[in-house]
Length: 355
Image (tube, rainbow, N blue to C red; front, side, top):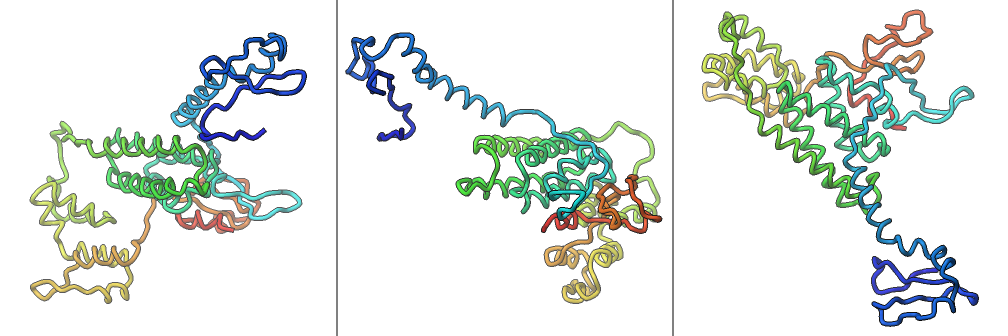
């Protein structure tokens, strides 16, 4: 029967079963104590029928404890499948669809982050999912997302590399969660609100740990980067694809600062990431009347996306529709499997599951 009371959060009223049906039973604290319990039913029947009433508060306490344990669980949903079959429709041989969450669960991303060639690819994929695709993941996929993210953070804290990259990822995820939690009444997130609040607190804790990292100079007395000839130093700096890395490298030493301001270095960086048409629209002259390629680069970055570069990527076989990491063998029936494979960027991977 429905409970009609002033406060819907109260435990409700106690009812006992009698020969004439169910009647309300009040205790001493309420001021109306029923002295003759036998007039309603026997003691054994009363204890049997009203067992749940005596456990109301225990069950509620256990439920709250269970929710907290679920939010702090360390169960890892890591899969190590090297390839998966991607199908967008049902056939006589296969039924159902392959979703983004299923692909994210089944592919071996936990091992991929340990590979330096695949690390940036996985981080970029996590960032894109955090921006717009987090709500499309299932509960297990969201949990797997947080587990892989934790593994990424622990790796960065250990080797002290790619710190800025992970800071940006955590900030993007926290901003998205702040927006989604405010609309939790619309069921945009899977799971209890307490679980997501705990995850947001964990993200803040990770951010604090990354901010407290102090990189110590290694006790190495051999040949260092600054001991190399200037032409080799400049050649190595040309391999950097992010202008922020050049600025950070120039802050390490005075000699490196002079090299990091080289106009030809910034010109090649602009020509690598942007087209000639984009560069012509954002021309900036210096005080000497020359093109300021450094200022042009940072202005172009704000207007156009940079060219993505990865050491290893996921690839899709157009013949058998199998998704796998590059260089991974899969059961393909084509005569030349390499000619059928197409490399996928992180955004292409997400677009693959937009039906």
